[in-house]
Image (cartoon, rainbow, N blue to C red):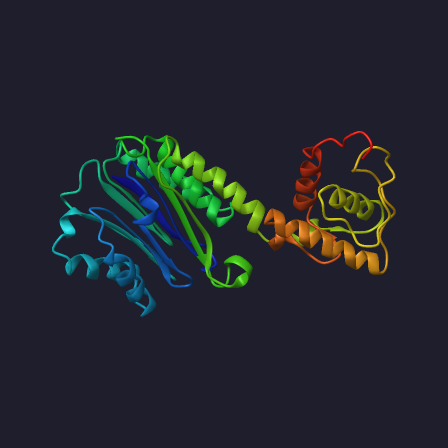
Length: 309
């Protein structure tokens, strides 16, 4: 019913699972991962116990091939199961029970394993493998998604499409550093779930990725004035800043904030960013170009001022 990839980043800091299926909410059943420990995918006739049992074995230092061997040996339903495991080091491992619906099979290599059942053919797993191996320059989550998309484009689940999921973990990589779930996205029921998963990942990247220090812009001079005017137009005026000088429209140029007003600019920007869920991209006295562009787009879509305003 499913094809998936479990994988580890080259530096061992990230682990993840990407999955797609003609099955409702496959992302709720198939994947499990633990930061700096490993990742597990259970599919075909899913055994949910594999997820925590597999991670527990990986946590204790058992290698991925031995985790797979141990789980299936202890399971009387193994002939109907499919399983992929990757650990903190070494090769990944995969199992396909002999009673899984054809085509069914998998492949594994250093830091990854790909598997699927009820597929259009073995070329689906080949496509997942090739996209993973060829995507080393991509960010980890996007590399997983590229592998999933390649399998989908190769025919994927031969019954059709319904759901997809993407799970990536990194130690303290979650929201505000308070958890390990770097990416946890699901498309439970959709005619093109892999494409929809990509759209969600784009939004996730915009909202939650940390800004690139090399691209940050100083909030000074004309840029500070523009940002202050845009914030005022968005309903978050900078305390102590002069009113916009462009007559008859809420967005215009203001004098560049300085001294205490510069602090107030940071505060107004933080208030607006919290409203827009962009707080993870804030840096004091600087602005992420992505945040600036979103602020500019927001101002363009503000209602036009009424006569007399």
